[in-house]
Amino acid sequence: MPTPLVRKLGRCFPLSETDKEVLQRVSTRVRLVAARDDLISEGDATDGIHLVQNGFACRYKVLRNGQRSIMAFLVPGDICDMHVSILSEMDHSIGTLSRCEVATISRDTIEEITTNYPNLKRALRWSALVEEATSREWLVSTGRRPADQRIAHLFCELLMRLQAVDLVTDSGYELPVSQADIADATGLTSVHVNRVLQELRRQGLIVSKGKSLTIPDAERLKEFAQFNPSYLHLEPKHHDRRSPNGNGFDDRLM
Amino acid sequence: MPTPLVRKLGRCFPLSETDKEVLQRVSTRVRLVAARDDLISEGDATDGIHLVQNGFACRYKVLRNGQRSIMAFLVPGDICDMHVSILSEMDHSIGTLSRCEVATISRDTIEEITTNYPNLKRALRWSALVEEATSREWLVSTGRRPADQRIAHLFCELLMRLQAVDLVTDSGYELPVSQADIADATGLTSVHVNRVLQELRRQGLIVSKGKSLTIPDAERLKEFAQFNPSYLHLEPKHHDRRSPNGNGFDDRLM
DNA sequence: CGAGCAGTTGAGAGATGTCAAATACAGTGG
DNA sequence: CCACTGTATTTGACATCTCTCAACTGCTCG
Image (cartoon, rainbow over all chains, first blue to last red; front, side, top):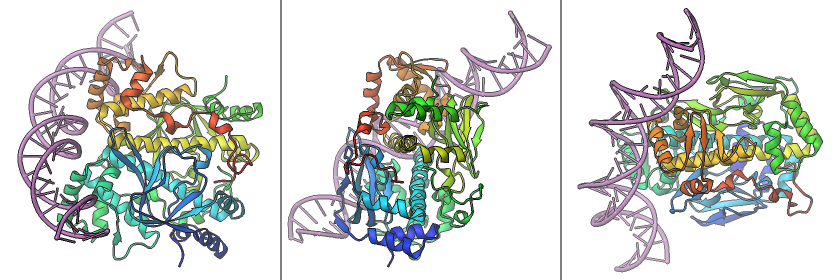
């Protein structure tokens, strides 16, 4: 069974069997982390690299007045701290929202991979860029979308991201986060999130029982949220094209 | 006179004279772009790389209802599209806010630089990571800070970023953007921005005449905005340290 | 079975948005 | 150099979305 990272990257890049095996191998040492636990704290000088295998984690900061801001959800297949090595310390924390399985990859391993497997190097870079684009899209949400669209948009995004790692069945997925977590991720209050959720349910846009969310009509929810998935850059076809200069992908570009 | 990019990177990384010359050289071909013009549009498959030399530009998206969301300000020394090559097309647009001088760097040139000048490669990667961190900080602002702190925070950030490229004199800088631009960047309305600005002026936190902004007491404004500059990663000292494995910086890591 | 967290509800307050108009400002053509 | 025109800023009255606070309910887990 391929790990989430293998599934995610394999979906958008043609990976060889060797590539996949290498990726699979690094997910071996898995650690179980309780819900609401910090993987990395702001100010840490990290060395290893963390990969979420199971469960939900997030990037967050806590303000002086105790308010928490969640800047990103990390779902299975997501890497927590690919790039921090060049920044001497973390400027935010990474914590679990649910119980998580986390793989820790040593820097040496990553180095070996990016040196010897250009396909993987490119795929990992792609996933980092998508995370950046996602962060920009969240900025659009919190800045300009009303609460209901904002939450609906988040659910659409998670639908696509979880689909990419085969975690969606029948337009439904496990969303092991609290309403307070959704509030901190959308810049709302947990009570307002509660009311908006009720309204979305009433309109039949979502169905939720416990921690599982079902989207009866994805197109309708996407329409409601004005969700445009282009920022997730999921279409594999584009990546098969050669670059304009005719020598394929430019692997040196940063 | 070193270009803004040279100044910015040189501040945080020890660059050799050769490094600086190389960087300086690529800023030669400069194009003058009018205010409110697009450098790159959403959906474009770009090839060159754009570097702001003078003036303000921004990353933005326009929603269906015509609302604009600005996800980032690009100031002199900022690179607009370092990484798009691996994503087949732009998921957002880049437009000027004021009249700008923009340098276009060919992909080949960048390739040459990142291949032959590891110092520069590392510095450019650093600046990309700082932009990412900045985007996360904006998420905190729009999500959890009240309008006055949000705007004050933006002014603090610009103070630091413009200081890094020697564009600040006497705690003041040119801010050639409209109140509507600030509104779109902070997720507010231009009329609310106007009122908040008046209040900040009344409290003596800022002084502004025309397009120039002065901050009489930077510490006071930072305190007011609860501004913590760590996300800008400006301290050069950290970057002189060797990495834990003793062989200096890891230049292969993505 | 109790404790504690997550979800739900209600009433009221506050911050920010909307709309529309007035004023100031900047660039342009004469 | 000035009138002219369009954009940017400012102001006022009012609407509304979202927050606050506080209570209550219902799970889940020990």
